[in-house]
Image (cartoon, rainbow, N blue to C red):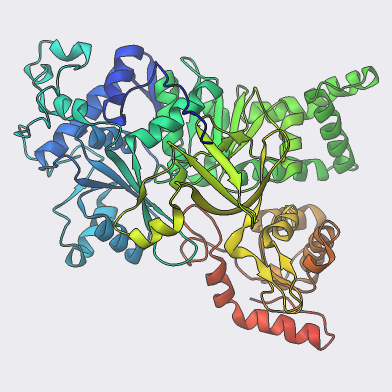
Length: 623
């Protein structure tokens, strides 16, 4: 039986098209956005956000954008992305995000398949990339730079002759629509357009960065996203005075949901300064209360602190003991005899870590990939609660979520209100509810494969529900490895166990139709270099060929093998010379491994591993 939908939140806009207007009416002069320009921090109020969104929306009307037209945004996460986002929604457009790291083929596919007519680009370089592809994109009418003094310069002056979609479009216009400017009367075409959108209308087409084949366009309606907001807003503690640090790509749905939630609650979005390498250092300046992230950021913080501890005699042992004591305190189980040790560790470890994150983080979210339990324990010990969630674009971004009122570490939480979850006979996680998308854009076969006749979304993930309804994800269905002996192996279990080593960046298990699994492993270059420096070692070039580095990796593989079943143990591995990247096609823009591409790229390495192992030789590192 399908659970009832989450109760509608009274304090939520009906559609995303009116969110900027709605938020300005409620939060007025409070700070909505904070970002770095010219080396200093600047703020924009909710009223300022509304003005910027209106400017962007009217510019789009001036470009002839009609209700339902596709407007693509090709940019890094920045304040102008948010202006463009809500400006396009207000204009009645369907937003098509494009990753700024996307290559020519992906840009051509996304813009062409979606039918984008206007492309809003971050800068002249991105605009030039799209212009270079215009011959393959007959549907693109305008390519517009959305930053700088000439932002939206292609827009015709004096918008617009676009009529509202229905006669009552302005009946519920925002309260300030009667201000003295004639453009702000209820007859304003932009406000009429925004008010005319309904929850059933498409809001966005987000192209999933699939690990195989071209990306598929997930259509999400205003109602799909509204259902997620109805279910999640009561679970996330936030409001005026809170600050959410936003460094995740706004081309990804997770970052967009964070954007929507923060602005609905009246908090401040704090945009990162532009260099992903500076995120950790910048947190001390940004001083967020809310920190949504992917596991990599939290893992990097753990690695940095552990490396510092190891630079001192006995430092690792003291670090591990401090984490153990901190977890006991977090669980309310700290014995009296350890209270002094806990206070001492707060001065030397917990407090400095909190200050490194700005000193105010009280809610952190991780998603997109599993996070190592020891990293969660470290953060909990330091007084930073990290809540793991699960979802996919097709589910409106959220299926289940841990939150302050209900958390079970090692799981991805309970299903959100209004979303039903069950486990199929083959272990696949199925989800159904108002948050689930209506289908893929112009791809009926893919839609039928994802949604069955009863409305169940087939996630492709394997999982289990415990007795209390908490969901645990165990792997990807399509990634299952079946050895020549008929053993079914879930590669993520071994891969994550190997990646628990801070010296390992990625591990990919290979073994389908083989007698046993082997692994392709890449290094965390910074961690290896730091270890070598502390140890007074000069490594050979490349570091992957250095036997001392290989010994570190061997330790990681041995530790992982001790945690998994015998058939899943890695019998041989290769240390690759370079890490995987989006640019080389081995990672998706959301940093998931393209497993098939990796195996194809390093096919010769894999064959050598099996040949050497069969010959009784040690497998050598290789690239």
